[in-house]
Amino acid sequence: MSEEQIYQNLVKICGSKSISTNPEVLESYSTDLSFVKGKIPKYVVWLNKVKQIEKILKLANSLGFSVIPISSSSPIRYHGDTIPLQDNSIIVDLSKMNTILNIDRKNRVIMVEPGVVFGQLTPILEKKGLKILQPLHPRDSKSVLTTALERVPTTTPRYQWDSSDPLLCTEVIFGTGDLFRTGTAAGPGTIKQQKKSGQAQTNPMGPTQFSPFRLIQGAQGSLGIVTWATLKLELMPTVQKVIHFQAENIQDLLNLQHQLLKFRLGNELLILNNINLACLVKQLPEEIKELSNSFAKWNLIFVLAGRGNLANDKIAYQEGDLSEILSDLKLDHLKRESVISESEIIHALNSSTSYPWRERLKGSFQDIFFITNFEKISEFITLVENEVSEDLGVYIQAINQGTSYHCEFDIYYDHKDEEALERVNKKYMDLSIKLMDEGAFFNRPYGLWAKEVFKRHMDSTQIALKKVKKIFDPNNILNPGVLCFDD
Image 1 (cartoon, rainbow, N blue to C red):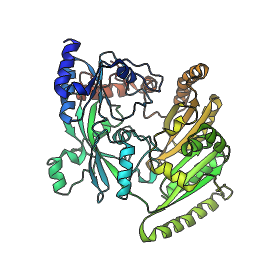
Image 2: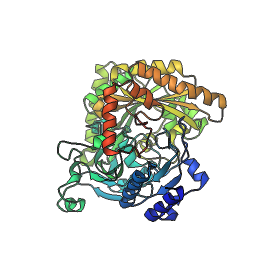
Image 3: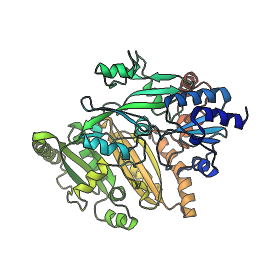
Image 4: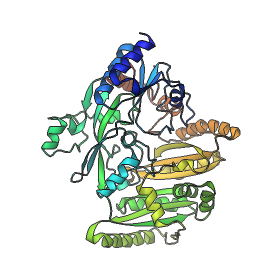
């Protein structure tokens, strides 16, 4: 079938106004801020109905073209997971599927379509006294659903009971074009009938002993397209108190963080080096540079919070517990005076931003991130600092009740400086490989990392994953080339 015939079929599905063949638009979807080399798609298609997605996937199976799903409303993309790696591809942009389908305060759960973004959702939840468990200061245009699917770490580890949190139930259209619902959303009954009987699609397990949401999560759109998901919510605190600890020795703060997690104290808890903390609260490069020199190299941000009539009492007893922990660890010497206001930190932790904070220092960055255990964090920091000559941001985030840690290294550079660009390009993969060799677990293997990550797995692992792919996307139409699906 010719390209013209493919185009006419797409027009029948979603109308000509929802399809772009503009060369500039197509080219914008072929690149991102990563070092992955992409292909220019044949078409960009904006969809807003589930039936349209089903029809396009079935059309792709019959005609043999690839489909790359995208949800965020911004052209800013970072990791090479949403750019075509083959010539015969179309982009399915779901940013217009942006309806908040349900907010259930009683059960603390929300149902959203893939195009719902943080800038849209956060103010609505705030008015209802609710908050989504969100990553560190996400950009306004970032898809809330995609963030959960990609397991981006949130800043409140005490509320993460499973590695999949805050993701709950999903509705997904697999690569075959078949629609399926996961968890308790699978039934019995339709979603409308379930809601009428008081159900809230809060349990992601199932149906039966099978939990397919674990296959979909982290698959980078290579097995199915999620059309809605339910996510966990928490009540918004009425009182918050920020505690900012500073140290020149990272191990002091790691030990303190470990104890705070052990006793489930506070809400938000994270460690940033001085550059990343300055980027988080300031926007202009000169302000960031000046502020980063105003406090110690390592910074632990810890938020005490409470609700209702006993909120202040709760904060008071947690401060007492904190004092005991500091005394037991002999960390009373930690500096607590901060030049950053409490409101600046709370704003960064509870809101999204139109100006991505990692781009504020030099306009460009490359982030290397992985998960590890508590004991190896300092080793990885030393390894990276010895290898990187550019400005380096560090972000350490405990995840899953502190059972493991997200380690992130942000290499800042000016993309207009060709020498710096070439240097960072080479260093990016060399350093990533060294970290893998030392035991860093790249649990989100985007772009250039994928081949290295899966090369280190036993052949049986790849065989199993390819069998899963064959079941749910037998013709390899969804995002081919990502993970280990490069056949």
